[in-house]
Amino acid sequence: MHSVFQFDDRLLKAAAEAEKAAAAEFAEIDAISQHGSAKVLRAFQNARVSAACFAGANGYGYDDIGRDTLDKLWADVFGAEDALVRHNFVSGTHALSTALFGVLRTGDKIVSVTGAPYDTLEEVIGIRGKGNGSLADYGITYGQCDLTAEGKPDLAAIPDAVKDAKVVYLQRSRGYSLRPALSIADIRAVVETVRKTRPDAVIMVDNCYGEFVDYEEPTDAGADLIIGSLIKNPGGGIAETGGYIAGKAALVEQCAYRLTCVGMGREVGCSLNQCRNMYLGLFLAPEIVANARKTGVFAATLFRSLGYECLPDPHAAAGDIITVLKLREPQAMEAFCAGIQAGSPVDSFVTPEAWDMPGYESKVIMAAGAFTGGASIELSADGPMREPYAVYLQGGLTYGTGKLGILTAAQSMIDKGYLKF
Ligand SMILES: *Cc1c(COP(=O)(O)O)cnc(C)c1O
Image (cartoon, rainbow, N blue to C red):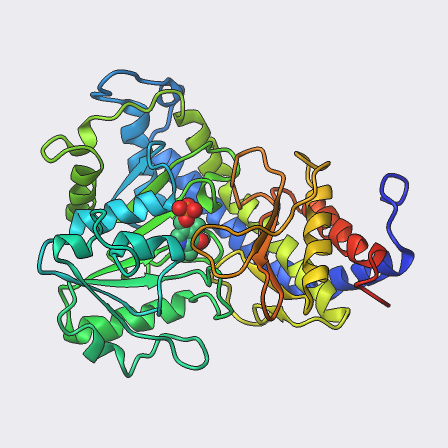
């Protein structure tokens, strides 16, 4: 490594120690990846995937074998009755919005039991900004059950909060917050609590960043619908765009009607030339997710050894691929992000700057040099420029390059005087 990249000897020593200290976590990540790979491989065989599935259909897309087989395959992997996997979900938010509008009707209520939802969902639900056709504009009300002080679902408060809910909504990932991601055990406990008083409520999980980080998925824990983005975990770094909805067949059908038209649903919508990428991405995803998680564990172990507070707790079950490093000062965040950028394969020559991103109160800095625009299964770091000056780290398609990205970021902090030994 030294012959190609110039890293401080003390940094390399700390990195070697961090890698040694993380051996048990790496082994667990490998075991989960092996299990995910088995699920995926068996599902490919069960679905009788053939080369014909990769040919792109055009036009209306009637009998698009690539699209229809991918839906079956996806449902099998995620332990769901059915799935809707489409390149024309433009983002995770679009897939989530489709699911919400697909399932909810005027007079219904959605209750989020993991506190405030991800920022982009606020406008969809109508918590922020009315008059644009949000759920609120259609007479769908919103309720919220906040997390406990420990950032866990408040099982004691949930029964009352969901008493008139049609949709009970959970966000698995921490998103841009310091609370822990939900583990599968957390999700199972919420499902059991909700079912006791509201057996017919639709339990919907925002599964973004959660796919393949554990042995099971929220659907295995009893969730009715899970939703995610293909430029995160399950696209394996290969899918160029897209999203998915998986779960109970009748609900997936409602979502398909919303995505295209009532009556036509999933039977239209050609896959163009996107199928091969989505199949290959799913095939690789368990291992790509493992690489991203190892990159995060390496970063947290290294930065903890250098005296920084990092999340998640290394001994807790993982719920997403995000690692939070509290760097304590704004210049340290800038130096770290500059290093992540410089350590990327694409756009390594540019320097990220904090900017006033729409919808955020403080400036936000973002570093990413990715093959797919905005794909955070690739190494990326971002965060709002405010206390505790934490960067949110995601991705790393390979562990080797992920580790080099982290070392380049640490070296950048050393060079600028924000990291001392
Ligand atoms: C990424 C993400 C979304 C969706 O975001 P898009 O940028 O629209 O794909 C929703 N929820 C969580 C927790 C996410 O991480």
